[in-house]
Image (tube, rainbow, N blue to C red; front, side):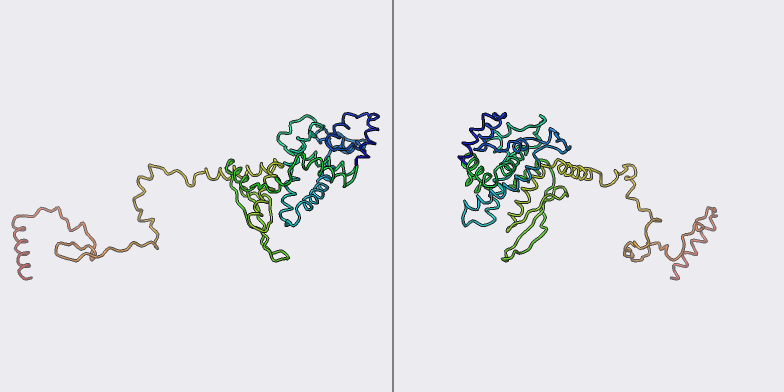
Amino acid sequence: MKLNNIIDRIKLPFRKEKELFSSLYEILGFYPHNIEYYKMALMHKSIRKRNDKGKPLNNERLEFLGDAILDAAVGYIVYRHYEGKREGFLTNTRSKLVSRETLGKLATEMRLSNLLISAGHSTSHNSYVEGNAFEALVGAIYLDRGYEACLWFFEHQVLGKFIDIDKVAFKEVNFKSKLLEWSQKNRVRLEYKLTKQKKDENGSPVFTYMVIIEGVNGESGSGYSKKEAQQKASKDTLQRLKREPQFVDVVFAAKTARTQMEEEPAMAVPDPEKEQQSFIIEQENTPEEVVAKPAEEPKKDTATIDFSEKEFDLSDISHKEKSREEIIAEAEAAAAAFSED
């Protein structure tokens, strides 16, 4: 590596892009062989540049390649650094080291973001532009110098200078708590659904949980404990919320639909004029199957008038005036009848 740098230093004055070479040397720790790879790595898609064949020129393809190379290189570094640690710990540490957040901070600290070529649009809505550029840079290193150079770059230019691997490894980030905090702040419903439970080849239980926000499926995560699975699902869902504005739109559209339904009245507002008479029972409309319990019949006595055996007839009431003799005769007849009883 040192011999190559000496040779490159000799050739440097004859290159037209001396400033770019010098800047890349500060970042990489060596000079590029083929500067075109690095130019492409620094080219954001917003510039909408195309080659002679009409194909877009940007760093997206190099980003894809660099992502794979970075996973392999960092995975090897973590594996070698932590002897005897389990797979879950190693995976978690690698994930922290290659996360978009970590890579974005690295790009800023290493001043890689200063070399980015873009259309000048604000990237405040997308905090992953610098992280993507860092991955594209790794892809350029791989094409220019090979895998060993990528490994050397991360070990010597990143670890120790910008990242303390031990602090990263043992720092526990509670992604579930962060997602819960976000949901409460935005007043959206959040739940975790157990979608799968099985045992691995060693008989250890493996859980898979899915995050559901306002009825919309988020991301899933698997782990050897429910907590680990929910943490992974929360982390991937948080990343999706940051990366995909469309996903956020769907979530809040579902929230709007739910809140509108909850605000609609459950029944029509009653008419106060009609409600005043609502206590009156309309007998003709009473269903036949609804029969009121009959009241207990009162005991009959001489003071009780019984209308059950014959119909009450208005003809019993007479308006004909009676003479004095007729009234005396009727009274005597009633007295005689009473004495006979």
